[in-house]
Structure formats: C-alpha cells, structure tokens
Amino acid sequence: MKVALEKTSPKENTDSKVLLELQGIKKYFPIKGGVLQRKQGDVKAVENVSLKLFEGESLGVVGESGCGKSTLGRAILGLEELTDGKIFFQGTEIQDLKRKEKLRFVKQMQMIFQDPFASLNPRQRIGHALEEVFTMHTDMSAKEKREAVISLLEEVGLKEDHFYKYPHEFSGGQRQRIGIARAIALNPSFVICDEAVSALDVSVQAQVLKLLKTLQEKYQLSYLFISHDLGVVRYFCDRVLVMYLGNTVELGTVKDLFDKPLHPYTQALLSAIPRPTVNRNRSRIRLQGDLPNPANPPSGCPFHTRCPIATEKCSAEKPEWKEYGPNHFAACHFAGQSIL
Image (tube, rainbow, N blue to C red):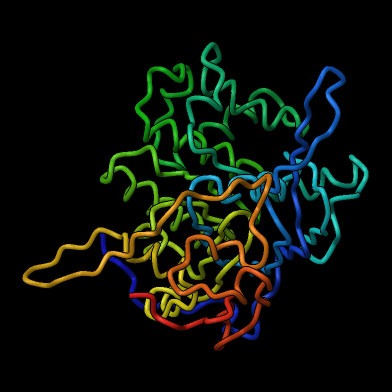
C-alpha cells in the first residue's frame, strides 16, 4: 500500500462547501446508583466538539480507546441523543427536527460498522437484508428492488449469486463489502466509517480502502473515518482530528499533522507507528499512567496528568482551541514544543 505523503484538503479550496458542521457537541452518559437509581454523576464521553466537514472530504478521527470517537459518530447520526450542541447538515440544523423532516437528511447520512457480522441478521439472506433498505425508503416493486440489490452487490465487488447466501457464508472482507453496499444503497452524501477495516487482514484492508476511494470519487461522498490505525488514516484521509478523553486536541491536514504535530499527545501517538528502520535509532514516547476516568476528568488540560511537559498552568487552566498555522488547530499551552 502506498502512503500519500501530500494531500490537498478541501478546505484549501475556496470553492468547497461545508457539508456537516458540529457546534459544541456534548454527550454525557448518566451514572446511576442506589436503590432508587438516582443520578450520581456523568461519564463525559464527548466534550464540546466543534468542526466542519467539507464536500468530498475524508476526515480521520483518531485517539485511544475510550476517547469518544465512536460516540461522536453515533451522536452525529442520532443513534445517541445529544446532551448539548448543534448539528448542521447541508446548512440545516437537524437534531431537533421532527421525524418526517429528519428522514430526508437521514437518507443522506449512513454508517459502516466495525463488525459487519454483528450488524447483519444471521437468519436472513443477504439479498433480502439489502432489499429492506428499499422497502423502508422507496416504493419500488419487488422486481425493481431485486435488480437494485444485484446492482449494489456488483458495485462493491460481489456477484449476483451472493444474493441468496447467509452472512456466515461470507468472509470478513466480503461481509464488510455488504456493509458498504447497504450504506450506499440510498445514494448518501455522508458516510461514517467506524473502524471499518480494523478487523480485516492487511491485504483485505487495502482492497476495501480502494473500494471506498472509488465510491467516493464516483458518488462525491464525504467520509468521517474513525480509526486507531494511523498508517491507514495517513493513506486514506485529507485531514485528521485527534481526540483525548472526549476533547479535541488537534486538527490539521494529514501532511501538517504528521510532519509537524503540535500537541504532545499527537506526538506520542505518531511515535508509536511501526516503521521499518535500518541502522536508525527511533525515539518512542511512552506516556506514564492510565487514561483518566471520564466520569471524573482532570481539571485544566485533560492531558496534563500524562504530559511530560505539563506545568501548574496546565492543571489550573484549560487551553484554548487556537489556529497555529493555515488550517492547523490545537489546544495546548505549549503547542509545537517537542516532548522527545
């Protein structure tokens, strides 16, 4: 797999339109206890996330497990109810729309899940499962639905005779192709890929990523690509958002973020990427301590308990989200300072 070292973000093109905008998104999960199950606190899974996604763009979201990546994606689609914040899609605020009004936008927003087998009914043939999409959202005849499903299967690299097979008869890569087919069935403009290739072999990952790229170019799709694999993100995405403990800590183009990471946490993540090196010493940044409890996050900067350059200011004052270069943002009192 070749790594794209230089990419142009849609934001650098003044003609690009904003497809999705998040303003101050928060998602808290209540903690209840006692005999009466009274609320005792909140797990702050997503904390004040704001960003813009442009038409035709692939925006990567990275961070440790538990940083809020998947919760953010589910909140955007309405699978999790927002605690606070606003979501604008194609210029319309959508989170408070009535069901019928919201349905028009839901068709344009789809999701590819990490485990395709878990998202498929094991007792239902694949063709019939895909037909349900058209049954719910269109008035197609039975013949038209079958033809549409066969066309979808061929679009993602499967065959017509796969129509009558069950999920267990497919490989992991084939099941993910079925998940992709279901996501593009209604011709959406925005797709969330939640660890869409993490469970696949490397060779199959490359095939699925190539398929996603082909579909993006053909249908002008925008992706929110959630992943823990920075190598895949570097190859696939235009920009990258780094999250830590539900907070956004850095956002920039792939080139800027990988070449000049501003936040200490980003530097630590990048230092952990496996690279083939010959007669070359590489410094690995090893963070001390565990990820703090999101139910009781640290004061000030959320990363200061594990940051090697943290000072008293970091524990007392939360850093502002600032632009330190063209389209390169970070939230750190000492942005740009190396921790190696």
